[in-house]
Each structure stands twice: as C-alpha cells, then as structure tokens.
Image (cartoon, rainbow, N blue to C red):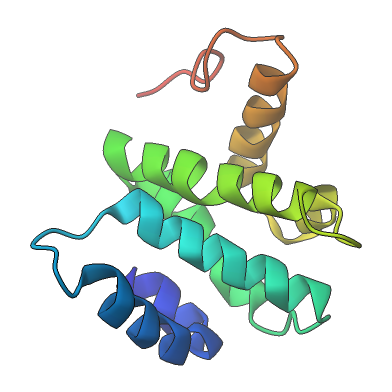
Length: 132
C-alpha cells in the first residue's frame, strides 16, 4: 500500500479515514480488503474523469507484477485488478475496459487472464502464465 499511496496522493485522506473505521477493533490488516478500497477509489476517480494519477498508479501496478513475489502478484491481480473490473462493471457510466489504456504489458496479461477465467477459457488465474 505505501507504494500505491505515493503514486495516488488523492487517496491519502480516504485511506486514513478507512483505516480508522476498518481497523479500530482489529489487530491485523487485511490486504485484499485494503486493495478493494483502493480499487473503489480508482473507479471513482475514473468516473469523475480525474485520471491524472493513473500513469503513476499503474506504473506501480506494473512493478508489483514484474518484481513482486507470488503473493504480491496474486494480491495485485486478485485484490486490485479484479476489484477494478468488478467495481467498474457495477458502476453506472464506467466501462472496466477503459482502464486498459493505463496498464503496462505484464499487468495487461494478468487483466486478460482474469477475463479468460471469468469467461471459462482457463481454469484459474495464473493458468497460462509461466512463472519463473
């Protein structure tokens, strides 16, 4: 999250509010829930046509896909990209595919894998990408 917060300063205040509300009685943060909250923010920015931060945000997403370990890649794909697709798909006047223009090559591969999974073309995300 720290890398994403640097890339997307407009989320900082919402992030602080979210942390106070979500974790006041919790001992452990839940990364996937955190990423979902960030995905919601990105969809809201897109809908409002405030996409100035998107190049920096999706550059971080690309780095996470290229340099992260298996768990980071999975969280970035399932926790962020899939949530962008889902939230955008359920938001009036937002087409999830409009986010494609911001994705780097590796992130785009993961995005397409999610689409292939949901259309039944592959059995699970990660099925067609060879991991080193």
